[in-house]
Length: 211
Image (cartoon, rainbow, N blue to C red; front, side, top):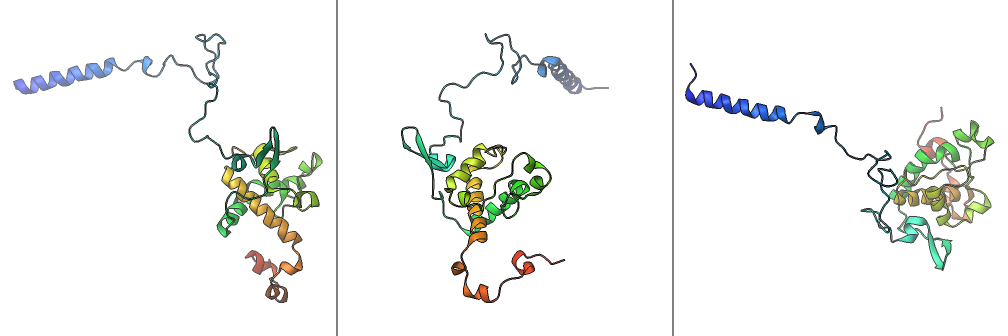
């Protein structure tokens, strides 16, 4: 037979269960709220998505360093020019990161050497427009800001990589492009004498095998 305390405890648990069950109904997940790009009768233009308040800046998006985020600087009025200096020191680690990002995003079209002969170009894309060859005189002389701008905004048939590659990584890719250009157009005077006397073979220079 249940004691008075046990009966009271049972009644309390039963009451709690009733309260919990009372709160379980469709209003918990079927809420009256606007969703992005849906129609909504509340607003005069019947659009659920509202325009941003003028001059709104998202947290982390206050990009006051024009040169770093655009690759260009204003000279006077609306006139701009490409930057010619990197926004940070170029170290071995920077170049390694640039090579890694270049291999992921650029090699498919531009090729490992940056000569515009990537697999996508070889398999038909070049019929539309040949991907850029970084070793032309025009691109060798182009300021580094140009390459940053192209990665950011696209150029010709190339689309923007702004949402795929962070600004710092874009600069690192540009640094690696300069390395590729130098590798294919370096004067013999820039090569150490020891390297000229004992040039590295394919396996030594790439770390791979010759099979």
